[in-house]
Image (cartoon, rainbow, N blue to C red; front, side, top):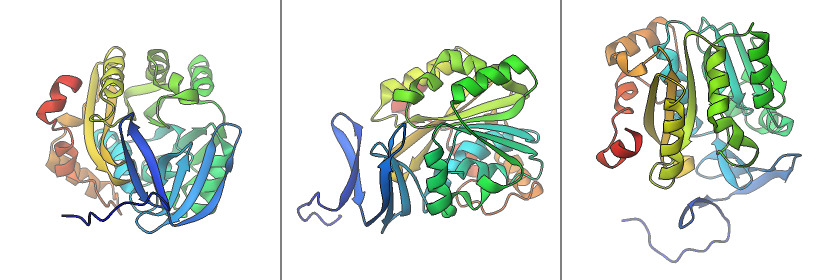
Length: 294
C-alpha cells in the first residue's frame, strides 16, 4: 500500500480528468510561465517527470515519459506503412512527433503546422529532451499558423500528398475543437497518398467515454479502417486512447514478427517502449471498452 498520510495540495500540479476526478504530481521548480495570444503556458522542473510543459493547466509533455505518447502515435502507423517519405504534423510544436519521424531513413519531408509560436520557442529553450534537435533538422518544414487553414490550402493546391498525417493536438476544446470534426477529417483524408494513414489521440476512455466514443464514430464515418488502441501514459494520469484511420492501411494486419523485422531493417533505434509484441497488444480492448469502441 502507498503512504496514506494526509495530502497537502501546496506544491502540487493537478489536472481534472473529468468533472469528478483528477490527477496530481509534485510541482518542483517553475522555470517559466506566461500567456501567449492563444493560451497560458508553464514549464516546470519536476522530481518525477523532469522538465514538464503545460498549456491552460493541462499536462502536455515531459522529458521522462514523452516516449510513451510519441512512439505510439508515430510508429504504430509508421511501421505498418511500406515506407514513410512525407509526413504532416498538425500541432506538435514540442518536436516529439518530428523526432520519431526522423528515425525513418526513408523520410524526406516533415511539415509541422503549429498554431502557437510560443510553444516552439519554449520547446527549443527547455525541451531538448523531447525533440533532440528535430525542430531544426533540414528535413523539417516548420510553419506557424492554423492547421485548419493549412490543410485546406494544401487540398486546394492538390500537390501535397502525405504518407502519414499526425494530429498531435491539445484536447478537442477551444481553438482545437474544429480539428476533431468530420469536415477536417475529410480534408485530411484528401491529402493522404495511396496507402496513407492518419493518427491521433482520443483521450481517456474511462474518464472521457463520450468524447472517445464520439471521435471513433466520426473517424469511421470518414475512413474505411479505424483502429483504436490503448497505452498508459503516466503524465496524463490514465489509460489513454489513440487511433489510426485509413482507407487501406490496417496496422493490426501486420504480425508482431514482421514489426520487429521492420524495426531492425529500417534501423529504428532508441525505442524505449514500442516493439512488435506491444504493437499488437495495444489493440486488445478490455471488455468494458469493446462496446464503446466497437
